[in-house]
Length: 335
Image 1: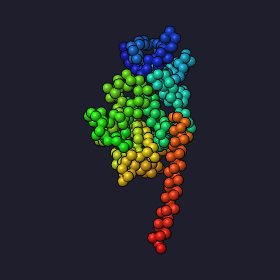
Image 2: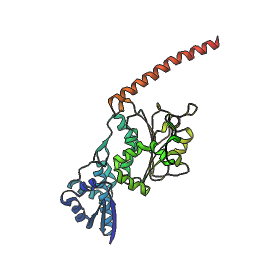
Image 3: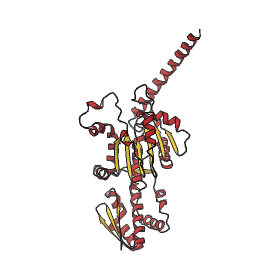
Image 4: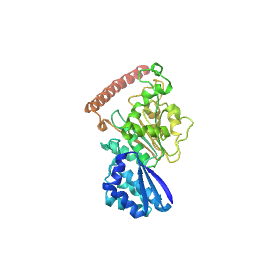
């Protein structure tokens, strides 16, 4: 007699999988001759070893679909059992709609613009994706959603989120507490996104297990990250050396998303942004995608889009005025 535990992140997903009067679970039990018992967010499957393995894969597939907002009905359960029996359960992902993932409160997360759709396709297709664009385009939020979706589907074992602790006009030393307390404010946007996707309790559980890690970029040195979904946020504030260090952490079975806004660099003027340098150096490297999001992809308040456009116009005007002056200075030197 074999036994296996299948875990679900959210009770809501389990409710969908069970169906009315547990009819979906009964179908799996009858079709595969197993026993399935619910214990919190865990499902205990017992029976013949081969049957238990097939039932566990069926349940994992159904939980994955439920997490993406799919309706779990009789037809879907029977189809998934057939896929598992034929060894084609890898096709389960194709059954889902364009929902990236479902938040802890049941809200579906989708790409809302063409630019965001291309960004999500690139993340799914490539090992390393650079998402570059202005504030409010969903670079970090969608990357975290993709990471949570991959984690729920068991395609990765860990989520690692990191960003450089670079001050934007303020000093770390003025903040109270130890090093972790000082860097936490810089990591807050990542925490907020994970809280929304997973819920505080589930996030805390996975963080304690080491399945989710949120840390400053400096903590990445010397590590090899296998079977992980790694997100580097605010990458415009990395140096060239830091970016190279981060990229070479990539291990087997891992996926990397690098996000940043090259118009908001907080590095000293004598330092080159690692993001800008990486965009140039990695442009023709296979299996690396560079996605450019624009003000058209902003999904915050409509005024944010106008603010970004206004700054771009001001910057372009500044460069236009600067160019003739430089030409004039060169002509003067020739004379």
